[in-house]
Amino acid sequence: MNIKIERVSATPGALEVIDKLKNRFGPLMFHQSGGCCDGSTPMCFEKGEFKTGDSDILLGEIADCEFYMSRDQYEYWKHTHLTVDVTEGRGSSFSLEIPMGIRFIIRSRVFSEEEYEILKREDAFRVDS
Image (tube, rainbow, N blue to C red; front, top):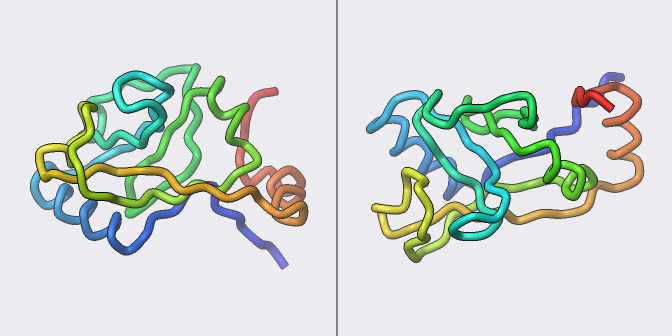
């Protein structure tokens, strides 16, 4: 049995906002901010507007949108599943949802030992060590 453990997902509310943003802007991408502006928040951009590089890791996809995080920040979050959610209130970031009077947030939970072992064993997520 091949079990795939996702590192990132989204709530129904977040998926609804993502769909609205995709209808307006086209393909999107996310990057988990490392501390500027709103602190550590998921930031949504038009695909390709945020330049990723060797210091960024692709965690997965939500609603067909790539979700990246810096390699340094990943070291703190690698034991957790991230869930993108949405809340009322304007953030101070450059994320596309901000003019809507809402902002994306992260909810997290620590992977179970079994989940984390599956991630490591199956190399479900490739990171250069």
